[in-house]
Length: 189
Image (cartoon, rainbow, N blue to C red; front, side, top):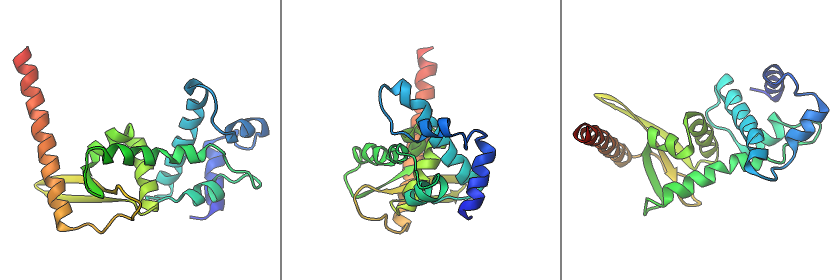
């Protein structure tokens, strides 16, 4: 995947990409109330995910996003760092419930922590590019997907059999909790 192909794809996805007035507004830093900057945040987040999916990119790096994908004559979006900082928020949230330097969570838990499937994909792509996150899956009777995340400044260590066992236990716990919730709802009715 070269930057020329990405830029062609962007022009197809964003017809007003070359409009100077609109580009100036998009490339500004976030400011003001959430209602002012949230549409811009959503625009950049969705565009990053579309590009990654279209080109089959699982791991992205911030310099690649800023300098290669979105460079317009030497200008890069000032707000992109904030979009990519979402990964730091996810790590902080995960570290609050884990006492060691890494955690293993199910893919569903990771996506709900990120705020949705698209957000989870973008955050995992970023974490994988920084070598702070790694996807893992196991297939014991049914497919179980998870994410191993480094909660410290160190890169995530390789996936071990203990990580797969931990993922299976966490997945089982989540399934049992779902069943318990269903039983509680039936009992209340």
